[in-house]
Image (cartoon, rainbow, N blue to C red; front, side):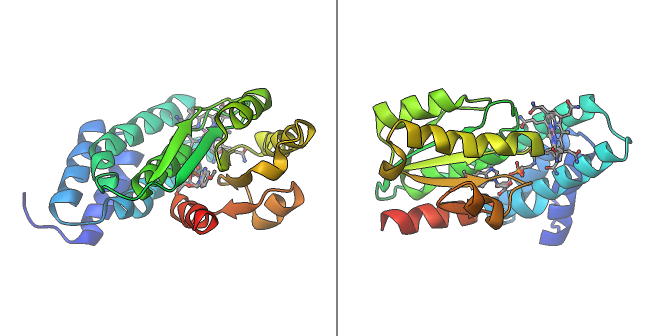
Length: 216
Ligand code: B1M
């Protein structure tokens, strides 16, 4: 590989997402690893920036749903290259976290990154996927007794579902047994407080740090 600066590789990662270029993203991820760029940086300062641009293009009607779908696939292919390097460490086990994207919401890329980083940090992760009902979250908290529940929502219309899950945990008398952390682009600290979550994570790294503090 021809030597490229970190800035150039991060730009290539971003652009290959924007250009919906699967081969390009895989190659750029491999080049990032070969050049010693931390894989999390390749995600957050490379590919995720591309996703933001895709989102802006979608709003501006330059891109349509097909391109959103494709961008999701391209980012997942990039993640496949990086994931083994995000989770290589043999680390002390820290506890159990159940994670999922709430009902009505199919966005799972940010939630998947959060889950991967949790595993890399030593948590056992129960990944419930996307479009998860409040009943399912309650059932898992009751039966599998994770210490932490991580809820993701990417749409303004599904944000309200976060509060609903917390209410259902209260109704089931389980709320005081678990810490609830919420994340996703439309959320804010204030919103998280309003719905009674224990924490809001602006990004996956911050989320994992909060979880680590809770179990320390
Ligand atoms: Co959609 N989508 N999408 N989409 N999509 C957004 C979210 C949108 C902002 C695009 C836009 O208009 N600019 C917009 C939402 C507007 C709004 O509600 N405010 C939107 C829309 C409108 C829609 C549809 C309604 C489109 C339609 O059908 N007409 C539809 C809804 C489907 C549904 O869910 N019911 C839809 C569908 C899709 C696809 C399925 C095609 C695809 C998702 C594929 C997938 O996830 N498997 C998709 C995509 C790719 C996007 C964008 C472009 C990228 C999302 C993404 O993966 N970002 C997005 C625009 C954007 O976000 N800029 C958009 C990268 C990812 C790393 O970031 O998920 O934010 P993110 O995760 C971050 C943090 O938020 C945080 O950590 C991550 C980084 O460290 N985080 C957590 C997230 N969850 C966390 C949980 C935690 C901790 C941290 O603890 C529990």
